[in-house]
Image 1 (cartoon, one colour):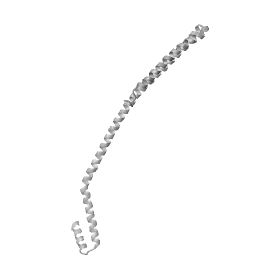
Image 2 (cartoon, one colour; image 1 turned 180 degrees about the vertical axis):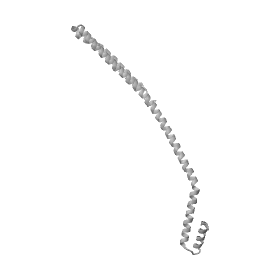
Image 3 (cartoon, helix red, strand yellow; image 1 turned 135 degrees about the vertical axis):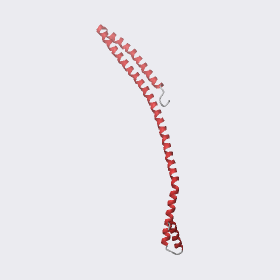
Image 4 (cartoon, one colour; image 1 turned 180 degrees about the horizontal axis):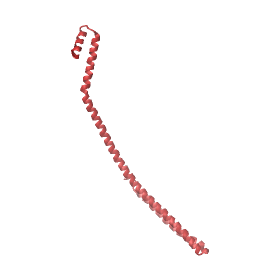
Length: 160
């Protein structure tokens, strides 16, 4: 006898006044068969839904990764430009410092040479060196101003 035939026989017995226990078990068996058949029928659509969800998640992550990569590339390019500008500015500032040190060395050497030539004219020599140093300082201020103007005029990464 098959399971379906047994279940049908139990239903008939219960309806005819047979055991209630057999009717309960019949209901349990029929419910289990219904659940199993439902799972079997829905298994395919569930797999399709799960596959589509995974595919959508992967596509979303792919787009996000591409966006992040392009953003990182833009930031890297902007950072490289900024570094080049800073390197050029620092090189110019270093050149000014070297120039200033050379000027100071030249003034000191000249003062010592003038004093050694004629110690009596030391005051006059000091005033000549002081005038020379004032001219040099004015030129240094102009150079520093040019560097500051270049720094202000250079486009920043936010503007580009």
